[in-house]
Image (cartoon, rainbow, N blue to C red; front, side, top):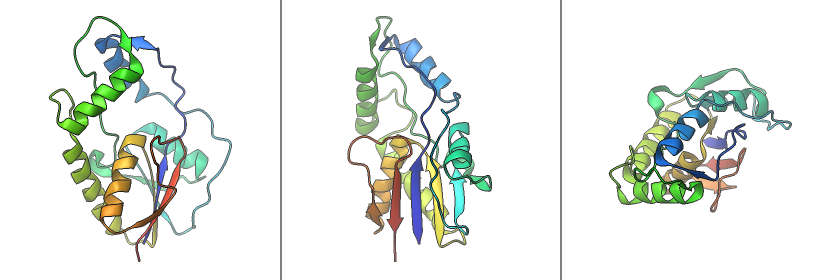
Length: 183
């Protein structure tokens, strides 16, 4: 089986450099409903590949623009949706957004109380997603989803014995395409 992991296109959103925790949480909520910028290139997948997206419009629009396909299935129950991120603490003083991102993800990693999902939960969800994809009657599946969860799914695929090409090292750029194969 071959599984392609693709991160959605660039979201047309301008992040402020500093925010309070309330502004930060609202910005993430707004980001989740902001469209992507037009995609000028195409990625070709086999005609018989099954295409899957998350419940977020940006992944569905990426499937339309980047893959040129409208015959995708939205993965149910939020199984492939992004790992949620909220501010690491309540603060009225504006803080640098990149620091808030790092601290929030550290809480995800260390089971911080403010994060709605922890690392262990994300990995369990990634394994359930792989099970779901392997149950599909297809030799090739393509999943368009989100950067942080893509990294988690890539890790789970490695644990499950998939060989990968294009696996992200640190950052997960928009439209990155990871090819995972299990023979």
